[in-house]
Image 1 (cartoon, rainbow over the protein chains, first blue to last red):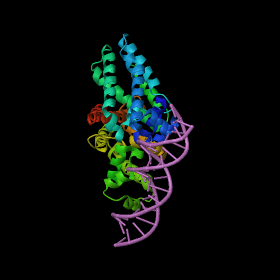
Image 2 (cartoon, chains in turn orange, purple, blue, yellow):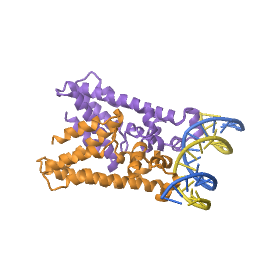
Image 3 (cartoon, protein in one colour):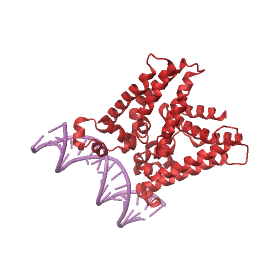
Image 4 (tube, each protein chain N blue to C red):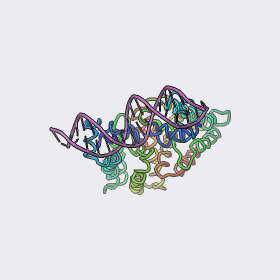
Length: 170
Length: 170
DNA sequence: GTCTATATAATGATAGAC
DNA sequence: GTCTATCATTATATAGAC
């Protein structure tokens, strides 16, 4: 269920994701949706974001925090990024939810996720002998986000793959 | 007028930019808007995108195509990028319009702009002695777009400034 | 839990007065 | 060119049957 909602919000953004679209995506009536989510669209978006956050934690952040060597943690995490941003045209839910009302509703939660990701990247690469792991981490995350934007422009996954390939070479 | 519309579409996306918001932004009634734009929201968005495209041409692309040395062309263009992405929280209209229906309406136009920008960057840096100017250009554009995403996350311009500063050092 | 039916508000869009 | 008034449609949300 949550997966479908994530997909709708990614594609249409917070304002564009109507209850009709959300209901259709799980093959339920709107009234049934309200039975599961009395809080309406905001609650549905919150669950979608929470689900996506848990997935980020599992696929991307946990590998960064494992007990292995920094280099291996980074490689595992980057492979997790490929999986996290799935689909023919990978889209970041965070980006889609940062427009309009979604920004005021979920902005701080999204910022927290970005901060956690940045810190995880910085810690994993500290051992790698970089001069400024924090700056490297911030730039790497920006590169990934930029690649995702270009993926939507060109309509395929290749920019993301090229970006991750480059990042994996330290 | 077009500037206001651009601002609304940046902030709310195509679906979120209602005719009421658009009309308020220029202090006109909805009916008056339809007098100027019989095609409704789609026509307004088209004019906003055209206006933004002309601004990109003037501030970012034209400097890349001038008769000066490659290095100077790049520096001038990057300064143009700072001006092009104005506001307290810089946002790329392209990114906002690539969600929902906006994607089907303006996707190809947006792709054309990205292609032009990439080619301009590659040509300007060919003289700079890079091994692969095309790849450098693509990556640079992705970095800018990624920085803009993070600008929306953190709520200020610093990621964009840091990104452009780095890109200006070749 | 699911549905149909419905209420209420907002949206995109027009008609017609001035 | 601008407006008020209005229309048809869609949106969010609820009531109540099953």
